[in-house]
Amino acid sequence: MVENNEKMYLELLDFDTDKKEKWVKQRLPYSVLFELTARCNMNCVHCYLQNVHDTKELSYDKIIEIIDILYEKGIVFLTFTGGEILLRKDFVDIYLYAKKKGFLVELFTNGYLFDDKIIDVLAEYPPLLVDISLYGASENTYRKVTGLQNAFARVIQNCKKLKKAGIRVSLKSPIIDLTYPEIKDMQMLADKLQIPFVYTFEICNTIDRQDMPKMHQISLNKALEYEFANHYKQIQTEGRKSKSNYDEIINELRTNEKVYSCNVAVNSFVVDYNGKMCPCMKLRHRGIKLEKNNYEKIWSDFKKYSAQIATMDYKCKGCEALYYCDVCPAEMDFLYNDPEYRPENACKCAYIRKAFYENKISFDEALAEAKEDEKGGKI
Image 1 (cartoon, helix red, strand yellow):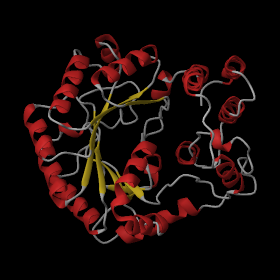
Image 2: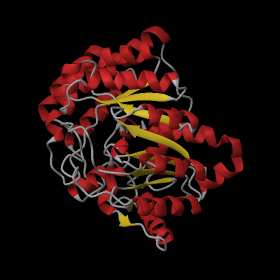
Image 3: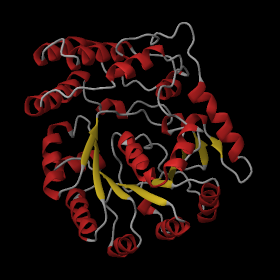
């Protein structure tokens, strides 16, 4: 979802090509994810904030102060997330303040707490997008995942209300053991509602490094099987699409000496529920309290992540499968205090992907290898 949002942001920035180029080339941030609260009305089994839901929220005045800082620094895109943002009694006031400042605002929510008043406000002052988390395609699954009764019908009804009000809506789903059997049903539901739908198999430890969420992570074999099946179905109907810049990308990755090949702290950052400015969601443990007079110092300090050169022992140097690897250095830094750490299964997974996507092994052979490597456990 993050990659999709980044693409959307860059497309929207096309209205001023010179400014966009300046932002991208000169490492000027234009997008911020702001956690308004850690509180949530749901108690999802996979939530990385599940042990901090009772944390005291930032005051309204502090949030406004931070929004003002972001405005002064030229931030354009502002995403409000939680916890559950609609739990804040002052949410509408915060939202309207940001909108009237001129931010392009996106909302991440579980979709349960919308009422007519909030929807009317959003209809009059439309957000860029309301992105709703979907936790299954039935009441039973929703209850098992979130702990709430009758949540599924209410969320779907709110999706319909938002759409009817002319508000852009999207759905996303973290796929875990409880929701895996309903992936296709969720996709069919989204298609019926005419709402874009994306999913991820990525599940993170809690922010205090507990691994309870990972207990619900599906096996590597199942994740790859679904991924490959979707790709196989696509090429059966559309044919293989050539990647004109594929060799260029591969070569760039193989010769890249940096640990972080992503855009961490290049054009975006996170403000967490404690008011800390963080390089990204997974580097929240490196966050620094944002105040009126320290923004420039923090942003300058964050440059070290995107500029970090790999050590001589970095096992990913020159790796032919790096293009297909989805291990995050920030998560490795969080879990192992070492962004260069790589789980063995991650490497196996990347090489299986490489062989399949480069048409060197068949769909069945790829699945067979994935099942064999499942013995190594989960990433």
